[in-house]
Image 1: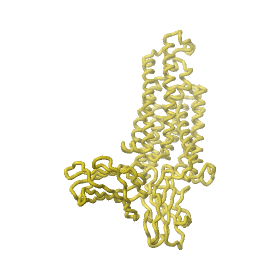
Image 2 (image 1 turned 180 degrees about the vertical axis):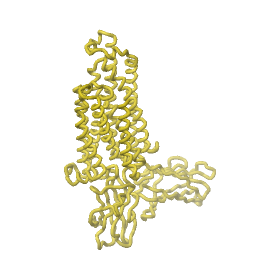
Image 3 (image 1 turned 135 degrees about the vertical axis):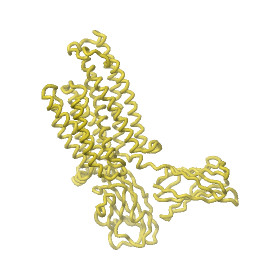
Length: 579
């Protein structure tokens, strides 16, 4: 009880430390979004501006990024390095060379958002009466990232989570299986976890530079890129992680000594310090990822830390059960350890369910966003894997309770030589053998599924959250001069290809079948359109197109014309914000 109070106090102190550190930070949207440019995208100016500026939804880093301006011939016309004007972290600007003339100019950019992921895009403006220059105008997540670097980074993230899991086996040893302190396999697993966590951290520092700048693996050891990474929040968090892991490496030999080889007070002190270091390591994951870049960053980082702690304690225990205890543990050792781990696993699953639900709400927000975005679909697979883990874990828990829930204390404390008897010599031994067989199968499946869930997590952390990318379909009802109406829906109301549905109704609200229905789109601010849209009749009064293309973001005007007869025609329009 005294130790539990100490650990709770330690957790509260760490939570308070990180909470105070993040409370002052302004909320940000995971993956930065371009919210304004000067000049505006598609604008026509009378004279060349002295500089171009971009405003984002959150602070961005320019250490390995750029803002470049080229003319219609592709020649660079910017001057100097980009900067944050007046120290505003959410803005980036670059000066233009003097003496530039009329013509079209394209601005391209690449910045790193607060969650360490690069975003890029382009916009254009024209000086004078020349033709407008076209660009995609889009912000693209990780645009231009080298494919090999991205793949390596995903592998490194998976290895870092695997390291946390194996290192989390220390919790299982300390709280459930004291005999594991001297088990050679258990010790190797814990040390392997430390090595994976430390090695993946170093690799993360080296890979972040090429990843953020879009360069290849040949720049992996670039001193400039590494220095730039260490100057970012991501680099600082990984530096803190390495320091904490380094101190933990000093503690591990003492924590893995047999009980009774050192005073209990010294052992308790080491365990408390290890708990502090473990929480610091876990907190650096949230403080350098999606948790710190989004709504409620303080709560999100704390939730992420607790989530990782529960995950590593539970799955780390499963690994040690599979690799060490179940293959060769004695009946008394099983009877003592399995009920303890059952309670630890139940508590961990409860914490994972609560924190995971919060994180899903925070990163997704709505059910449509869960079902219609890449992030949401990956998260759905992760949730399915978690539910399967819970089901298998519950089967193991039932097995443990049936066998050891009412097991006599005398059997649990049976001497080691009695435990070495053959399975056929005693009904209890046969029952233990049956439990061992079932547990090895179910726990082995749990470990395999957990590895797949960790792989999904490694991919998820590099994806833009659904809340930041999802745009609800646009829908409206337009009144016609003839007294009828038309219902229009546009999906997904984003730049690029869209699907539009039109339903026409008469003045009585019945579905009508007019002689002709046409649709056109225009972007007045950029002098684009009107552009005709080819509609296909899908049924009485129902018209659709699956190839409505919006080449630029902005406020587009959609104009619907309904001709009921040769002399009866109505026109209605609506404005749609395309992101």
